[in-house]
Structures are given as C-alpha cells and as structure tokens.
Image (cartoon, rainbow, N blue to C red):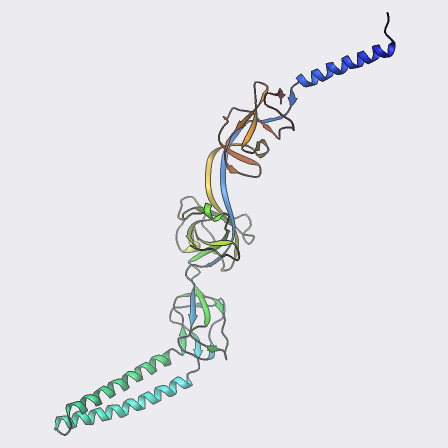
Length: 345
C-alpha cells in the first residue's frame, strides 16, 4: 500500500529537520578565544590636586591699628625681615612719649630718694619704692618701643607673596591674615581622595601626576602626609604629596626619574596614587571575566572555572589564581553556554 505523497513529504521534512537539529546540537559552538598575557597591572587611586607651598606662612599684625601702607604685591619676592605692611603709628608714638615722660619723672624721683637715703633723711622703704617705680617706668618705655616696632609688619621667611588680603585703610588685627608667603623652592601637592578610595592609600606610596599646563610630562612623587579626619560634607580625605626633583628643593628621591620642572603655586594636577603594582601580572581580557569566573576551552569543551582576580581595569583583568598561562579563555562567552559544550575558536 502506497502512502500518500503528502505524508511522504512530511516524513522527509521531519527526517531532515531531526538530522539538522542533531547536527547543530552536536556541532562545536564558535567562540572567541584568547591566551593570557604577561604585563604590568597597577591599582590606581585617582584624585585631583593643586600645588602649594610646603610650609606656607600667614602674616598678621601683632597689634590692632589702621593700615597705612602695603609695600608688596602678590608674586613679589621678599627676604626674611623685609617690611611688608606699615600700620598707623600715631597712637603708639603717643603712648611711647607718655611712657618716656613718666620714666624721666620716675628716674628723677629715684635719684633724689637714693641721695636722701644715703644722707639718712629717708627710710630704706622709701628708697626701694622709688627704685621700683623707676624700673617699672623704664620697662614701660621698652614695651612702648616694642609696640612701635610692631607697626611695621615684616616677613618671617624669604620667599614670594602668595596672597594679599590687605589694603591701605583696612583695620589690621592679630586675628586677620594680611598676607601669605611661601618658598617656591619648597612645594607640595595637596590632593582630595574620595572616602571610598582612602583605605587603599598609605604613606610612602608612589604617585604619578599630569597637568594640561605641561602636556606630555609626567611628574612623580610620594604620599608624605594623610589627614587623620575627612571632610564629611565632601566625603573626601586630604593627602599631601612630596614631589621628586628640584621642585621641592631636593634631588629626586628615586633614581632614574626625570627631574620635575618648577611648578607655579595653585597649578591643578591629575593625581594617580599607585596603591598596588605587579609588573609581571597574568592578564586576560576584561570580557572573559564575569562574577569571579572564566570559561576556558579545554580539549574542545567549555569549562567553567573560578578565579582569583587582582587589579581590574577597563580592558584587562589581573588573574592571581585559577588558570594557567597556557589556558585559552573564552572572551564574551555566548548566552546559554553550558559546562562541557563543544567549542571551537
């Protein structure tokens, strides 16, 4: 009995479909393979910073008086002891004249009482009182002269004027900063680090920096200070970096580094603290790693392996354990890939 043509055609189609499905199910899946490579892996902590004086000096008046004249401008070089600001001295000179007049009278009284004591006309107590009064009057003169000297505000260090916040007619007080001085031969970089990254930063770590003001130049330094407390409003911590080279008035701290050029105060820098570095790391493409695992092709089969990762970068991931340098990892494994699937590169 012959089967109808439609039934025969359906059987043929079904047979071909089953054959094709079986072939596809058994055929190796094409994947992208990569062999791990050796290279440098660095865990960098990014921050922004700026150049400032290593030991900035704030200049204030020691007395309260109107400002008569300002003798320097921002950027001017100054020497230690150089006059910077002159205060009005009228009141101070008046006090000095008063003190000198009182001292003269006290000295005359002292001389008289000493002479009369020697002649036996006054007691020792009278003489001692006159001597004490004269001594106090002369001390008052010295204090008035010292106060008069304070009407000229002088530089405490040699350097340059970094900032000027005083003008003639201002009222100078001991609490008000008039000028800020710094030594351009001794500078540092102050950087702000996000609170999420500060646990990875430690004293002595190497730092690399760059700035648009010096295209193509890399500056080197080390973390020299860390603030014990952070800024809660900015959720950040402050670190200070000592530069290698003559920019901080010293030779390079590490041999082989290029000498840092002189840097102007206030220059902004992109800062990268090297928290961890491995110059001979085992690296795989970032697309091969997911959830602490990689797929490897072993004898034509896909194998899922857990790995221990180190530095994770945008393109490469450091692998510290779980695979060998000879393994072939599957990059961007296809969806649905299962343990033991046949694969080919």
